[in-house]
Structures are given as structure tokens and as C-alpha cells.
Image (cartoon, rainbow, N blue to C red):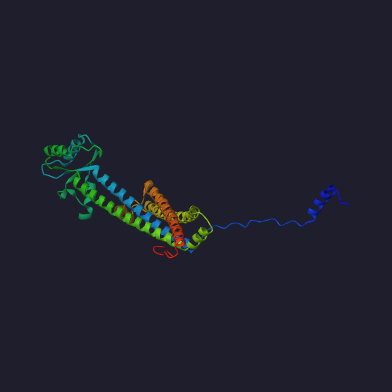
Length: 339
């Protein structure tokens, strides 16, 4: 007799429990498509760091020269000088006071200061030596007038009034010096800008060729991914992310070193004031401070380098996939296709 169906159902769980259990399936951890660190990537990072450092250094130098030239121009253009030549029939102290008061009557003047005998002697000390007695020499005396740069006085009218009141007085508005200084400053800034453009051009070419060289070492990865059916946009995105990380690291290192250089130079300059070395450096280059705009330019340079590398990587991968498809469709065609 056959067993009832109910008894078969009761035996089924017992038989299933007696069978050995299958081992749990473990998913093998996925590795990145591109190796996180290799010789090509490290070399590209070093190249990007060097070019970012040079570009940021040049950018900071041009910014420093521009601010120094503007400071020179402002310092000279905000003052004028009244010179009074000595005369036997002239009361010098009275003439100095009169000249100062006449100049201050004009709209656009702020203050006036008479250069005393001690200060005049200090001005002549490099040429005539210490211990100079101005009474023994016919040395002109000076009055320094501070003016409003945005609303300067009428220099011709002031010059005529001084000549009529004090024949020995002459007005120097420093226009000749200001014009020469402005011309020199503009020329210096133009030269610095030209050097900056050359450095940026060299940086662009170097980063582009270094990126393409690093990608050529990973061409086989592009080919394998494309042959197994990966979409072109997926492959390009993966390479784009990889080279974006490399370029950000490299440009951040170079930019940080340039910013640290300017910060260290500015700190050293502030700690060594009133020394011959610092005075000469300040006279030639101004203060080693690029300001907020300079540091913003350094940060912008870092971003530009990173974007440039990323775009180059994407375009190169798309070009490589196009070459692979072209060669597969026509194996005899090898003109213009890199092997």
C-alpha cells in the first residue's frame, strides 16, 4: 500500500534538515578600475606640483610688483614741495612760514610741514658728511605740502602766487617724476604679465602632455573596458575622476608651497625691519605680501590646473575609444591612429 500524502509531507522537512547546507556566497571585494598609485600617476603629480608652484610664484610676484608700483606712485603724487633759495635780504624762517600759509589757502591742500635745519642736514649727510652747518652753505630750505590726490589744487595758480609773494620760492609738483614712475611701473607690470602668460602657457602644455603620457600607460585598461561593453561615458568618467584626484593633490601641493613661501618671506621681513638687507629688499620689491587677491589668485590657479588635467584626461579617453572603434571597423586603416 502506498503511504498517504500527509506522511510524505511530514518526512520532507526531516530529509531537508539532514542534507548538508551550502556555504554562504561571499562577494569578492571590487578593486578600482585604475590603480590608485602607479609610476605614471606619481610622475604626473610631481609635474603638476612643480608647474603649479612656478605659476603661483609668478602670479604672486606680478601682484606684488603691481601693488608696490601703485604705492610708489601714491607716495609721490600726494605731496608737493616748495623750495626757497637763501638770499642776503631774506628772512628764511618768515619766508618758510609765509610759503606754507599761502599754499594752504588753496582748495585741495591738507597740511604743510617745514623741513627744519636738522632734517635738511640729514638729507645732505650722504653727500656732505655729518656735522654740517647750514649757515656756512647756501642750502635751500623746503616746505612739504600734503595734497588731496582725488582733488588736487591748481598748481599753476599756486606757483604764480608764490613767485609774486616770495621771488626766491619755486614749486615742484613732482609731475615729471610721477610720469616717469607711472611709465616705469606700467612697463614693469607689462613685463611681469608677459612672463606670467609664458609660465601659464608652459604650464598648460606641460600638464596636457604629461596627462596624455600618463593615459598612454593605461591604454590597455581602456581597451579591455571597451571590449567588454562598457559605455564610453562610463570609461571617460572613471578616468576623469582618477586624474581629477591626482591633479588636485599635485596642484594643492604646489599652490600651498607658493603661499607658504610668500607667508614666510613676509614674516621674515616683518621680523627684520630696519636692517640693510630688509631695507634694500623693501626698496626693490616692496613688502612680500600678496594680499587677499593674491592668495585668491593662487587658489584659482590650483582649480584651473585641476580642471585642465581633468578635461584633458576625458578628451584623451574619448579619442582613444574612437581610435579603437575606427581600427576595429577597418583594420587596414592606421593613418593618424596611435598604436
